Amino acid sequence: MTRPDVRAAFAALQDHRRDIEKRRTIDLFAADSDRFARFSLRLDDFLFDFSKHRADARTLELLVALARAAKVEERRAALFAGEKVNLTEHRPALHMALRNLDGGPVVVDGEDVMPDVRQVREKVGAFAEAIRSGAIRGARGDALTDIVNIGIGGSDLGPAMAVRALSPFCAPHLRLHFVSNVDGADLGDTLKGLDPARTLFIISSKTFTTQETMANAASARKFIADALGEAAVSDHFAAVSTRLDKVAEFGIRPDRVFGFWDWVGGRYSMWSAIGLSLVIAIGAKGFKDFLRGGQDIDQHFVSAPLEKNIPVMMALLGVWRRNVWNEPAQLVIPYDQRLARFPAYLQQLDMESNGKSVTRGGAPVGMATGPFLFGEPGTNGQHAFFQLLHQGTDIAPIDFLVAAEPTDADPGHHALLVANCLAQSEAMMRGRSRAEVEEILAGQGLSKDEIAALAPHKVFAGERPTSTFMYRRLDPRTLGRLVACYEHKVFVQSVIWDINPFDQWGVELGKELCNRLAPIVQDAARNTSALDGSTAGLIGWRRTLAG
Image 1 (cartoon, rainbow, N blue to C red):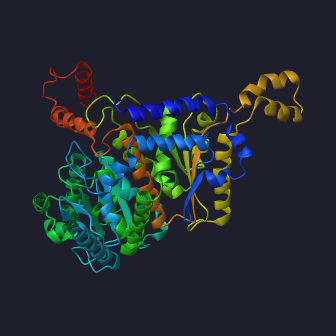
Image 2: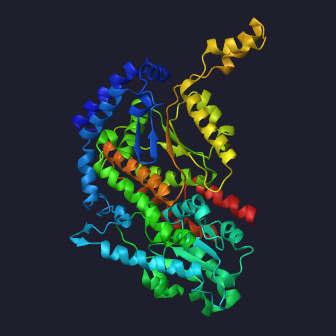
């Protein structure tokens, strides 16, 4: 690390850790009756509580000093100004323009991009509403009731997550399906039971060359052509792509092609035409509410002081745990079954963005970067991996997400769900001491020998840091806020680590090697002598098994 101010800020945090780790979080609450208010942030009904982190006012002061040393405010300004913050691909990262609903200009290379953004948004909305109303129909005049989005990565994870999350707001007469895996079982299982005459496929690929997407697209095309005839293809396909030539070759007509721009990264593209399936599901108005939620956070992110800024504090607390406490994992646990795909969506957003080992200048980064992120809805996770979180040898900070009110769900169930969420965050913080365990066991009538044998197994160390998002209910605007919070959190952490969060060259290597190996795997006559021993051996064994 060559930034002396950042080095000094981290050194101060390391010194501070030695002081704060002598204090228990529960004692910090006892010493400050206003701790919850001091260690939580609000944007109207949207609350971020981080009071269960082992941190005090000095911690926050040092973390904000780290952000200033890393020039978070300056880099934030560059991001929103449309500067080429994606250094290796020489591009801006202006996905925020996609949710700019106030009409102000957003300039890229001296040109306001907002007229084009609005034009595409209106085209997407009009097409979606025509599908929803039945004005656009299939080749035989049937209403299109099954919508199949074919994409991968950012062209799948975001829309698939959001459609499931917002299912109470989706049109009841439509069924949305998502196919991403090149494994033929993914598409095959989806097509079972679908009526080709009532099915619309959306092919989501900026270049219209993505291997997995185009393999699935070709099979989907055959599904339509075999059932309805070649001429029906144009009535049953739409595309989100910038390659009009390739789309036309496929048989999709221009009025059903929706573009976006190279300053929209794949994992940030749900706000663009890539969200077409979501717009069809929840309607143009619902999608506008989703965009407004993202814009709410954009405005908060650029205007709130660092110490009152939700994405900034999310990022700083993550750095505090990742780099000062040396904890390599981060969990996101939504207490909402409809948010089941939210952790998977965040995996790409976070790990593809900040999974880097060199700085923006190409030097070794010199510190740990992005965490391993995973999660599962509560309460399911409680009966799976929470045992390790409570009593394992490693600590992983957790983000809990929970709505105050249910959306189209039983209120009694929801009260129990909220109680579980709050109980887990309290248990993670509080733990249970040996003395408490012994007292409980003695009250159950166990002998001294029985207590001595059982007590160690029931001790919980506690001091597992958790944050909690609580909001009135999960609706399109709230989901937009959640997604944008994590986007900006990832950006702030990239600034502190001095890495580029907008490229993903590690993904590209696997694609290159697959293109080289695919012909060898497909043709048993191909020679494998140029391959490494393991790869050649596995291909040979596959040939044996496959006959």
